[in-house]
Picture (cartoon, rainbow, N blue to C red):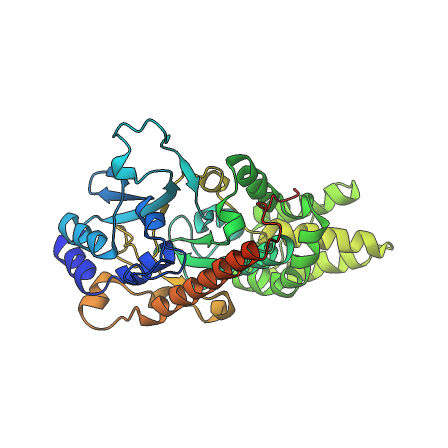
Length: 382
């Protein structure tokens, strides 16, 4: 990674104030009044990653300017964000008789990696992502975002493209930030199990998947032109019917799927027809989640607007509502920013939208406390 490009990025393009405002519950660190919770930001852990797999954890800062100065000086290839601790991480080794150094709060985070879709895509593999296989991620964030909002009431969700092959979700609602490790583990396992665990997930996702299966799997990926991949689909049908059927791949994926679909629709029981279709659709399209990233409050995740060291791309926030407009080949890059070609402004705006929502949610929560409403932490009934 070019150190001069990194320094130029941190000095001239990196939206430090906007990022720190988001990390400070939507409150601008430069506003000096009694409502500003600067101590909250001071207790946030950062981690810097350097060339050669070297990293430094438990870094913390008192202001956005301090963070920016350190980034310019150190020029880390990327940096991540951890939990809010009981003490500022940089003070963790000082003897504190009354306060134990431990994580107390952190956004619930979700990591979806495109390489986990290799069994259901043919256009790319590994870390390579094109616009066709990007549709899997588009469905993933729509699916998970809907589940978070409709089943758990988590509405302040920041979605970020990692810069290479995946997407991250930062669930910022106060109830999500205060989940225990046990609750985080339960929640991510619930999300990962999908329709096998919950009829509610099935109902939320069924229409989305039914409308996109043929487009993505049959036409874009042409999955059923390959006999081995076709056999995987047939296994699902046999498991549902208790049969040992075999289908041969036709000249095109569309022809093969048409034959399979005719067979499924020939079943006499409409409920069984729906069950087979749902099983197939969900097997191919339901999000693949890296559950270990989400399970512990102390885990780290790459920061929005960090640089991906392999590609030079910036980890940019995006709106779920504009998911279909996202273009993998148009992601802002260190070189493009330096040349004046790329622009971070639309993505900074997305971050500020989330910060505004977060600030408003925190304000409403404070008002509820003042009015003596019940403010016990929410525990998902999983």
